[in-house]
Length: 71
Image (cartoon, rainbow, N blue to C red):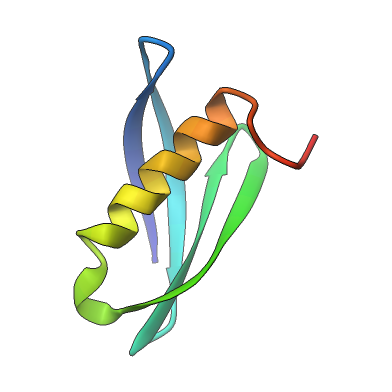
């Protein structure tokens, strides 16, 4: 499932998307500007709109500000 997510980085709103996979144990990847970062944690299905969204927004901000291992 793909979802658009918004976050604020350096005073600007950035929009990326996250891809959620799995049924009972969910994993996610966050993509912005052609860079995809995986989240290595597994979450319960009821955490999709809580802690998973918070981690995805933090990852989006890190990608948008250039704090990622990928170039």
